[in-house]
Length: 114
Image (cartoon, rainbow, N blue to C red; front, side):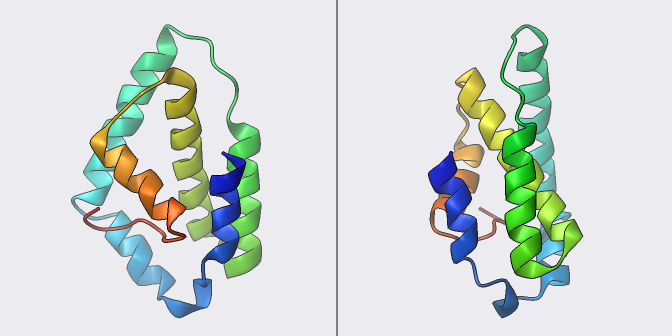
């Protein structure tokens, strides 16, 4: 997980329009896929005790905010890292989530069609 967090430092946040990126994340198909995976995770968490992901989310937020200066973008990416951490803890596998993770592995902020 730390290796993935470190990839956030490799993103050039000045090279893209943050408002456009956030709009793509709030639109289809990204939004419905993210919510679908989030809901699946919440269901799995009901019957399991897992480590709290707040520290991972906080670190992701701080890296992105420091690099971009945008709190909304930092919040979105922080939520992604919470989702990824939960999926690892719960051994949850999903094709769309794998694509989300692959974006971060390539130091790309996921949005739109993955």
